[in-house]
Amino acid sequence: MNTVLVGAQWGDEGKGKVIDFLTEEADVVVRFQGGSNAGHTVVVGDRKYVLHLVPSGVLHEGKHCVIGNGVVMDPFDLMKELEQVESWGFALKGRFHISERAQMVMQWHRALDRAEEAARPEGEKIGTTGRGIGPAYAAKVGRYGMRVGDILKSDFLDLVRKNVKEANRKLKALGALELDPEEMVRLYTPMVAALMPYVTDTIQFLHEKLESKAGILFEGAQATMLDIDFGTYPFVTSSNPTAGGACTGSGISPRSIDRVVGVIKLYTTRVGEGPFPTELNDADGETLRTRGGEFGATTGRPRRCGWFDAVVGRYAQRVNGVDYWAMTKLDVLDTFPVVKICTGYRRADGFVYTTFPADLDALAACTPIYEEMPGWMTETSHITDYAELPENAKKYINRILELIGGKLGVLSVGPARETTLRIGI
Image 1 (spheres, rainbow, N blue to C red):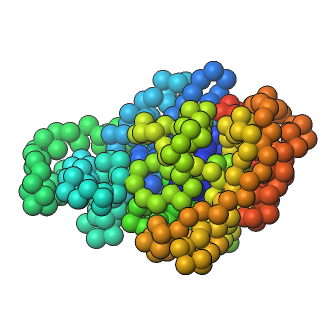
Image 2: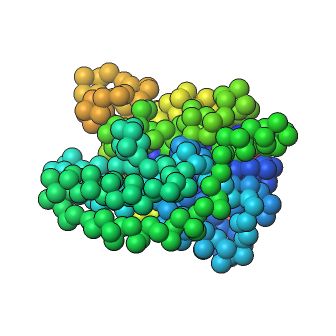
Image 3: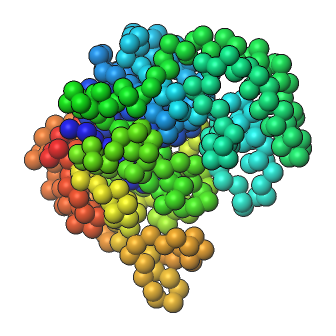
């Protein structure tokens, strides 16, 4: 069974935990897009593991982990993370692979990211993490990026010098400090030897695994509403974290995909700038943030919180073709006497959007339409059987499924592995 797992909102849905859960039945886990601006958190027993680039499957001995060609990989972030993974006691030799076609995020991309964001006027800032992801993807599309395979070339350090000089012209125009090309050469020289053992023709590797009937799990970072094409543009990431990106980011045919699992939080959050129709700037929003621990795994920034948005969920189901939902953080809602679901957006002239509009100005002029349902007012984090859930909790979940489509596959009622309920997947 080859599975694509995607986030269905604005990220932070709990993908790391669900990937960890599904890895048990997979042989290979592939990260297919994004960079170290993502953060996946997995809780095992009393230990919390946070991963940014390395696929979450690394926490399972014997599973192969692949960084696909669609990823933009910061070599230093990766080296630091690999050291951390090994310090946790997980061996990497022979089971970690980096696509030679993956793009690298270089130090000048980080400098450009910060300079470009600083140059944007207030109100027009994107809310970038400053990790160089956007400039790295821009370099890829502009056909002047550096790929992982470049470290195998004898003239790699000359390529570093050339790219630093080009980046300095842009940094100077933005009024930012320029970089020293020779300092960059000294910085990158040890990186070559450290990463060379992992560089792989991952397309060949993955197709060999397919031929041997191995199960592959494709892991997306970020989420549908941050997709460069389908998200709340321009407040988006620079890649395609939707299901289609799994194929272009790994070299696997769509015919090889058996199912799509969408991860969706049972309320809504967002980090950074951009529209958020159901955002709560009141005590309810603060309760969601506090109970849900809603602070970014990568940035530490507090997340904006709001009620569940079924318009977003339905849109994500259509874009991704979600077969099964992995619903997370039900327990965060345990103390609410009333829970709300947004079913549409009403414009001032009375027109109601039931699908997500591309025009963000039109969206900004709308107000959410809510259905109210009674809460269940009892803790659910100890429950291990779906049948034992409070009736009102089951009614809430079933109403969401009616509105967004798809089937319930997994339900999470807490952060730990053992609080994950397998339903229909």
